[in-house]
Image 1 (spheres, rainbow, N blue to C red):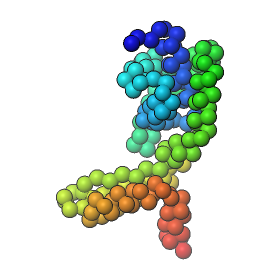
Image 2 (image 1 turned 180 degrees about the vertical axis):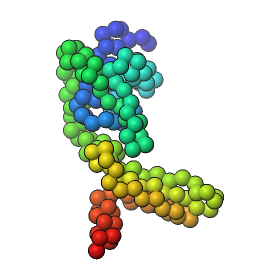
Image 3 (image 1 turned 135 degrees about the horizontal axis):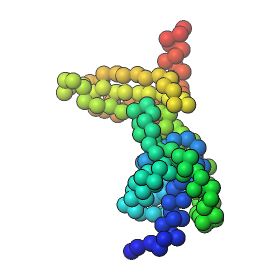
Amino acid sequence: MYENSSELAENKLLMLYVLKTIKDPISNTQLTEIILENNFINYFTFQQYLAELEESKFVEYHEANDKKLLILTEAGDNVLSLFKARISPSKISIIDEYIKEKIGSIKKELTIHADYTLGESDDSFIVDLKAIEDQTLLMELKLSVPTKNQATSICSKWKENPSEIYTNIINILIN
């Protein structure tokens, strides 16, 4: 099914609107989630539109702390300002409500990083934990653990309560 040109334009404008509303750079995955969870566009069409927006220089990727994050360019902001009225008010309302509800978890995802990889020897895992604030690295901690269970557990605990863990580590190191 092909969309007409006004639907195509509205959907691209909606993607620009999300980036403007969030104000901070976000990952492709986060933008995809916002659009797909609200059933605006299917995944493949979304990725095509995103590539077209990038090609038109309305959005661009920036590297920040080993992550590729999307930002709205000045050109994208100008286009949005000129044509925002083409986005249906109901879609704007849905996006605004969604972002208001989820902004905490969106920002947390951008500031907290937890991952693990297989260590140099196959009997260990390297856990990499990071805390980032305003795109500045606050802390990075790399640990070697013997099991995958321990690695996933450490990553989960870090994601659940990073500020308490960060504060405890700082207190232990200072006191």
